[in-house]
Length: 399
Image (cartoon, rainbow, N blue to C red):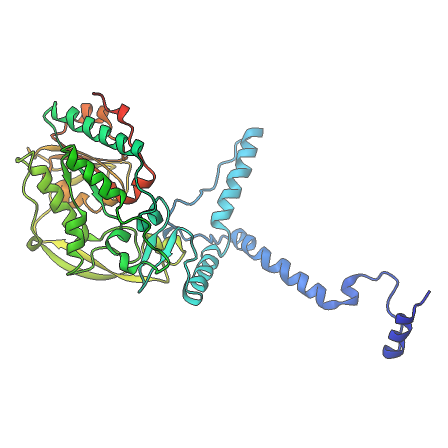
């Protein structure tokens, strides 16, 4: 039965509406066009992969991308291949790097915000690391509790005593995070919760317990008055900041091991400036190709003799779990350095002072390594933000 609405419609258009269940595409041709375009667009990444185009840009990522899995002829192998292929496709689908960059640029340049929750967009092009305790370190979110302070005190005391009984010099040091040295470049929304920091609490423990420690925060903060000593788009200090820290560490080492040579002076280097692509924080936002900065380096006038032995061919600044650097034929003392990423730029400087230096990417002290390497010096470095995510295990150090 035709209702009044249908009759009114017939009078306006001169015909009856289609009530015979014709396909929607026939009633509305544009729906078919839209559907076709949608399918075509979402199929483009796969089509690009099939055509041999890898949408990944490994250099623009701050992580290792998934590799294409191997297929083994078993049920388990097929299941694993499907999972591995899914991870590979997420990292390599066609135009991925371009889409990530477009998204990052729209957020960063158009909206003025960081496209990554791991990166804090600061003032005047400065970027700061928010993860791994970075945001908490910027605001002094919470102080070390009594149990944590006790664990640090006991661990450091045990380490010092265990090493000194073996005639090994020991230096503990805290690398100041960028947000600690350049708080004025943080966004105004980040406010300090406590006037004291966890690093300052730990420095006080070192003073009270007579732990040999190298204070880096004071000289590094002073050095920034004459030049920029941290990257603007990277988490870490640049060559010039690392040089200041290196000098203070060597001074602390020589107070116990005078056979270690004096630190090189600034006159042993030529300051160099070069424009580079955005570094690790820019990569986290997908903007390594879109953001640039000036790298302030130091080119040595003197010949550097230290050579990386493990892994073969690695640069001294390589972020390896175990890095061994030696000076062939040298009779200088030996060293073991427990470190994190902030020591990477220290390696070229420190290594000139030891016949063999073993750099281990770990915050906990490991006596087994010392028994094997027989060093004359042990340096334990930790970045200040890790005081929010790491507490030492005193039981690892024998009394």
